[in-house]
Image (cartoon, rainbow, N blue to C red; front, side, top):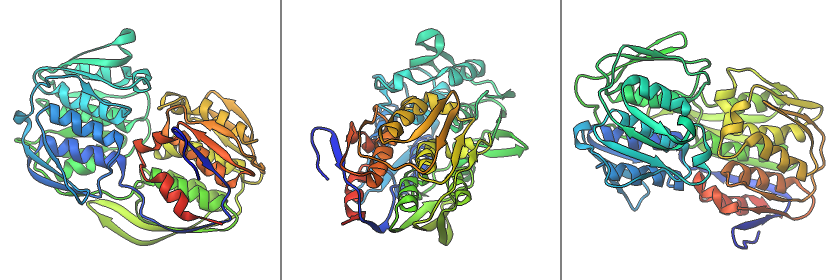
Length: 437
């Protein structure tokens, strides 16, 4: 593999072999920082994902008064003195490329006195924010945004948060749910979120461990704020299954592969990619199953396997694997028969329009697919040929191009490749290590 000004070339590997400790879960890493910054006490976060996205969260929290120390061993120490120790930031809160940072911090600062301005890079400033602006305003904060309240930057004047309210977001989104629940921590009574489909529950698991009270009734999640501050808790972050998905798909579709992925989080609200690949015929074995910091974890042994096409359309499944759908589309292209992905319109408002960018990338490799408003229809049995593809500033698209390049005939070039640092800084070196001639 070669590197040339933010561009990487990938050649097909004769074999894929080895063991990967995938980076820590990005969603949990963000939450461990934010929630412990609100809490009282000292918390150690091990297995933390050091990436551009989480660095944005650290920088923003420090501006709000949090004491966060990054250790030489990769762990992070958060020293919290409770909500009252946080204060109005002296500068704009730059969330970089991280939608999680922006949406969760919006919920946090909505319940703090003072003014906060949240912005990000060009990509983040195109992402939908009306979904949090409306509920935070209804809770009592004063939130404005450009494009008639739909796009960043966000300007938030924190205020008294009124409890006793219930919200039903039109889309299933763990970030929206978490923003509302975070604001609800500062409320004078319970706050309820009614989900249209189950989403990842890392927020509920961690906040409950820190002293918040949750009640779950069907699709409704209600938070009751603790009487005092949250209590800081140590967190061991499991490996990110969204990151592991690259190797799950690569090893499954490669003709000669066996990879062991160690310490991967298999939270059932996140593990849709396992269900889909197994339904398609993948050979994935879960070993050493255990619980780490309240999260289910396992080692995943994945081997080459022939796949068949399926329909991926269950609305309840989409939030469980939304970030992995581009890789699922690649798996469908290399399976026998047809694969259809529906009810995935949320892909349109990610770091890129992932329906359009995934379709463009796969077509460049020679895949026959139909782009639809809410997904794809993919003709399987493709023979991939090398291509020059662009990440569109989206880390998932850069990784998709690299995995496809492992299977393509010739040398593939992935432009804008350094964006993988958003979630997986060591991706290119791991790809080199696992690829064998």
